[in-house]
Amino acid sequence: MKPQQALCCECGMLRSCQRPRNHRRENYWLAGPIDLDWHRETGDLKCSECGRVTTHAIIHPETDTFRDHAELLQLIGLRWHNGHFTDAQKADIVSSYHSSFPANPYMNHLWWKNEENDAREAGKTTFRAMCGASIPVPTKHIKGRDVTDFRAPEQLTDPEVMEYERLDPDTGTYWDVGDCVNCIRYRNDKLLRERRKALIRILMNAATKTDELEAPLVNSLFDTLRGMADSE
Image (cartoon, rainbow, N blue to C red):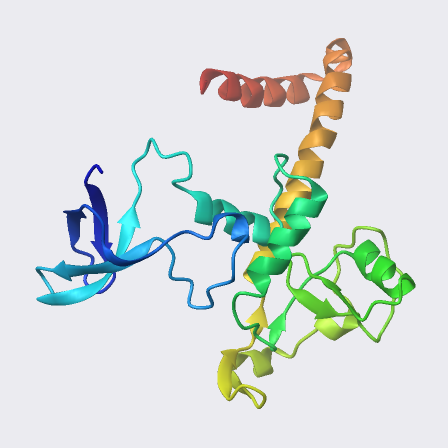
């Protein structure tokens, strides 16, 4: 077995090793039992800096096909776009990913209006937020577009309430109150992909009408598009 690189989880010291003790392997595709402490590809090694045995993270070589497997699963779990998996496969990963750690009950999630409507019509009590977290179907129903840019009433919060932590009586844990950054990121990514597709149609249409464009618009488009071409 070739030597591997390992990073001390206490001090960050890098060392080489053959095989660490108590090696906790990656849970590929989350097919096995969910490890709630998320110790994957870790093991116990002596750290010269700490002077004792500590937990080390195994660093896979760049040639390893599954080097970024955990990061890939995280993106799929957060419902990022990925065309290499079926809807059923992605749904399984999303469910397993979010069941592997406790949920913040005071997190303000975002969701697509059409998914809320589908869940309500199907008689479901929960559905997936943009980030993939399971959330209750809102009791306050408002009409809206299939893809809404607005929050439903239950998502509105008082800024004063968001300045401190709140205690969850069910778990005895304090949680930050705030907006889900993963929902925001997912929403922005989806809207950007849709706008890029719309831009393709606009550019193709504009390319057939360059003789009709006024000088200021011609110069503006020329400078912008030439800069894109020169950057390649």
